[in-house]
Image 1 (cartoon, rainbow, N blue to C red):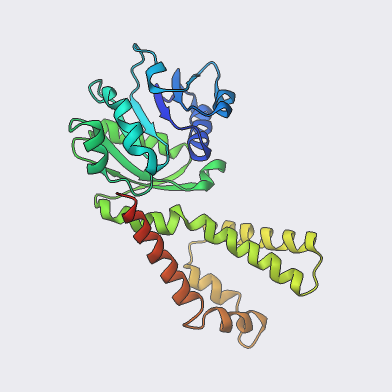
Image 2 (spheres, rainbow, N blue to C red; image 1 turned 45 degrees about the horizontal axis):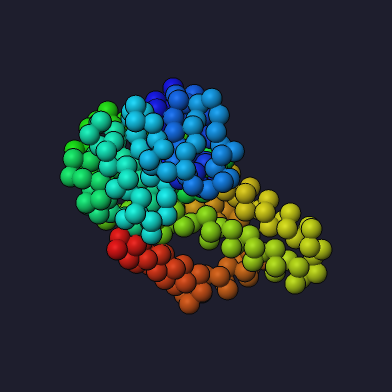
Length: 267
């Protein structure tokens, strides 16, 4: 059973987390979101309010989950600082925002866990990396672990600096995979395959390959080699993609750029 939660932000990721908690049984909780669409998330287990001022004074959440845009942190976080005194742990999924920066907005007594999930959380297939800040107790960390496991796998690190490249690899990573499917579909159409079949081929190839790598104990490189016959069609394609100036260099540069942007978002 998920204990009482104050969820700040009911967008795509906040909504995915909420759905995962409900599957596990959610104690009466509160969502703060000014969007008119957020009202659709209300239910017997969730009251939806438009501002922090509307959160019932008697409501005592065990965790405050911060699922707002990092650009809004300076405005939003101080509105919920009072919950630190009640022993709530703050679980942030805001990209780039550091633990120290959040504690400066919430108060030095705030227990903050910084985490980076990804969008497959919507189908409970996400991967989240969390990092506990100063003063986070084992019980608070366990609570955050349970909240995050409701949307997929969870890993923990003690070095907060790792969350910037984590954001670049897994947080932003689904977009790279979606781009691959998009480009495969486009290339298939260019080769004369009808558009509906091109989309079906691209999507099922990407999703099926993901299922295979998830189920296999082999390294990704071993799976690649297994499907690559010397001198065959796959080898012809990989000769292009694995050229040092192609995918190896481009993907490395892309992840470095995303890591840098994550650090910039710390503000």
